[in-house]
Image (cartoon, rainbow, N blue to C red; front, side, top):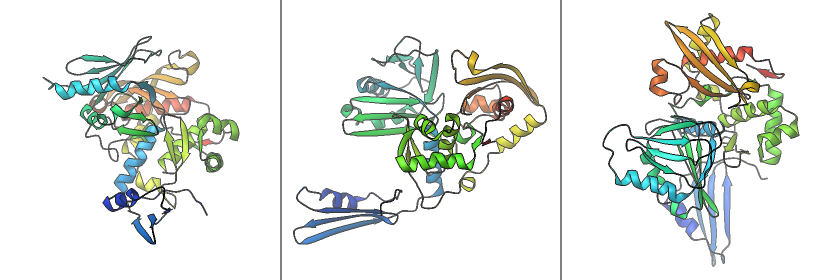
Length: 384
């Protein structure tokens, strides 16, 4: 019986040697199961066997891996670049010692112009030829650019590179398309930003949870089709697309589905034989309770609300400006899209100034978001 699942193995020298014995003239059998991965190759009258038992990975690894999937499920902005342009930028910071701080890398997006990479502190710009941006002006600033050295040996073999960015100080990814294979590098907002502890994408995710029957419809559709876009799932199941995307994010967070930001498809991929206890793995963030208290005690005042139908720059987002009283008043901006994701936030508090959104929103942005959610009409079959 063929079943779909995941096993974790140590890809060591012994396994490498077993795979190196593959020949078109030899019969080789792979055994993939919950217990591990085996290779049996017939060489003349002899059979060479190698079996790697499943390795139990620590919870911190599991959390980090699932957080990566949570980031990919948040619809990063993706564009294609030429490998030579990316290599040129990498070679520049490899060959030039920065004279001062900061050591940032910026993606600059200007309407009707090529996307550019800017390196700090030199302020050297590298246009990405062949790109053409048509949205609103924006700059995405990232740190830890030295990690791009990991791409230096892959880029000469790539025909193109797909780059995906989520926002300032948030994770970003590079997919090198090298003929029959792809190499994907996912990076956190900066070098010391730990995926398993410092990332807080669940705080940016939709707060509303689809009810169990509709979530089961989404999962059942993927079980049957193995991979699909959220629009296809919505069209074929009758579940509204915002609820489909909410269910898909929760499935990614539970290690049951993986997101492919390049094809925009979600794939069935069970990490565990038994469902993961997400609530135990991800303890509630104390910021949630503080934000709820600020909202419940009337410390949030909405000053301006721009609904999607009047939001010309982002027609799928509701943008709000609010004042949040927390010892001192803070002016807060929060933008929530039609699936309930927090897409943008700004605040004057110290936590936001130090971290931006790289460790999730501050309590004031979260409180403003609660006020925006309270104004939204309740969706059938969705619970907060």
